[in-house]
Length: 110
Image 1 (tube, rainbow, N blue to C red):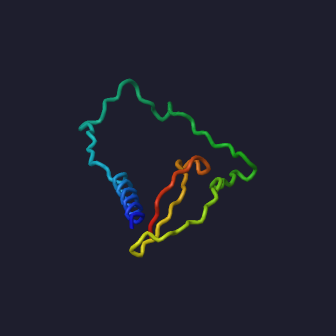
Image 2 (tube, helix red, strand yellow):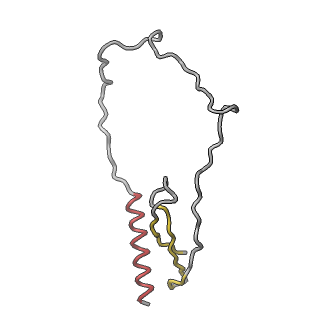
Image 3 (cartoon, rainbow, N blue to C red):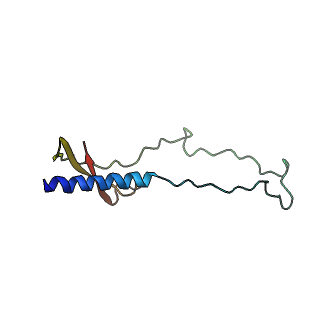
């Protein structure tokens, strides 16, 4: 029973943290009522930068880019948490841009 309460408390804390992180304060941006004044001369069509065509990097004109390395996933070890709920933990990358870098554990319930 004590183990269930500890896991239920941990799960509640994780859910609360996720809900809190998803909330945002209502922020109004103060925008000027009139557009900013232009200082100095402005560019005309004849002064604009010339259009440059991109140079292909391969004979076909483009290269296929894959999604990057895929980390290996460990199977989840589901354990009973009580009241018909199963719990597990999952190690996930700390930084989405670095999937093979440092990992953190998140709690799961089903």
